[in-house]
Image (cartoon, rainbow, N blue to C red; front, side, top):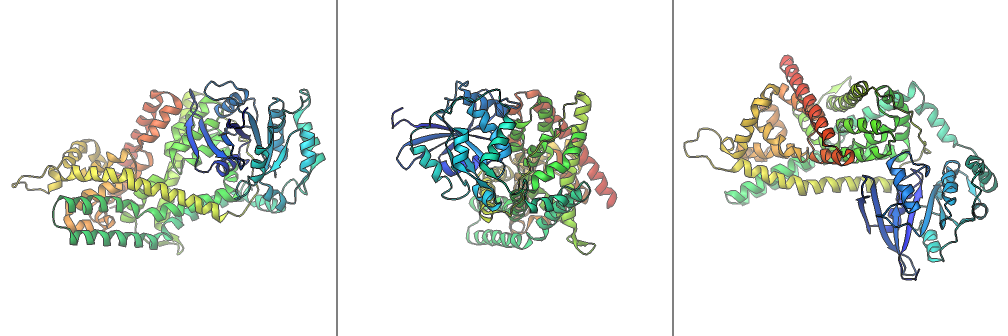
Length: 612
């Protein structure tokens, strides 16, 4: 190759080796994400420039434990490395990324890759953690035994990839000598560890001490339940002051515009449409960030894989593969990445069941709806002196989604009569203190995503709802409110035949339609409709007391139940179609989710009427 030709580099490694963190460190913002042709496996490719000025094109291949593929992800990794894909050029150089704290597992894949006879560099990642553990790696001995260049990286540090860049600036390494293919890889790994690695203990003392309790068959589930319980208590108890501040700011802005603008369409659009609509959703940002603060801390600490271990038997008994835990956990943030994460499940039947139940996990988009309804219909009082009643209800809503997913999976398993569930084989990372920088970045990303949705799709749909609720204007002899005469009023009343048994009024029906694009839009839709219906007084008032005064308890409970099940997200259905390649699956999922939503809301409405 000429010096000007971009170097084609592929990052390979086991899951959880820090490969993607290294990819982000190298490429920064110069990366693009797409799908490989013919499959739904994600393709991440980026570019960066070496100190010498040479361009490098780097491909972040899906994590794999072996080239003997057992999932779509591993099949793509194998085909790219072997040059068997027409849409992806075979890389010039392989960088095998390994976790320096767990070489016993990761070196096996390195040895398998070395048998390909391709130019390759081994990157010992997480070397900072290895040194803290007292692990000593003789890099020169390891390089000699592997017949491969071995460098150290710390992907999370600013200069953590400098050694790799220096190695890439040198001449392309020669292919390793042909290894003996009949040698047992596990025995070879043991020999490498004995020659080049000194590990004080297989596991750290602190890990053993914590796991003794966290993985205990009785104490472990109790700890897990207590942790999740604390999360939902905190979402309501700690977010209040921040929500009050945002609500006061939105009310002040609406009042300023209402006072200084002349009466007319522009004033109505700004105050009743944009301020009432987007402000009604933005107020729930503190609760969403608190929820993700806990999730990120649990993930950074290494607790989430242990939670997967504890729940594995329950999932298997319900017809779910043990591998389904991580995709379903991802669905608590958003069902879309959760459904995409099912690619790691080898068996098609297990993967299909996981995709079907992923929408039942309570995603973050539901939180504004739940928070609004709980705040309106559940009194803010303590239970047993220490528990928050609103937090208890929120915990119950999340739990209802989880239990429903297990029940649906069990029914599908019995109908399909398949017994393909396999026990979860999971690598448990070391316990560690959450990195404040990583937590801050994660919260910033979540806040950015939420604010972009508020400023994008939610703003656009709020304006649409305002238009539907404002036009046409009623004639002079119209006896009702102007919004009842509007397009929105006609649409809402036409839907009431179906939704009246649930206790839904026409305003709720109007909010449900744009809520199909994004669940949070239901909140902004209600805020817009009630602001227009009630005039300036309603526009400046909080939506929460309006609902508490105008809706029955049965209606509030029914709408909560509706959002546990209803597939109010067209993007999720689109990804489900893309991942399964079947409109029949999408149709079946939509039918059963809407059916469960209607029945659950009908029962909740009856319960609310009985209670009152």
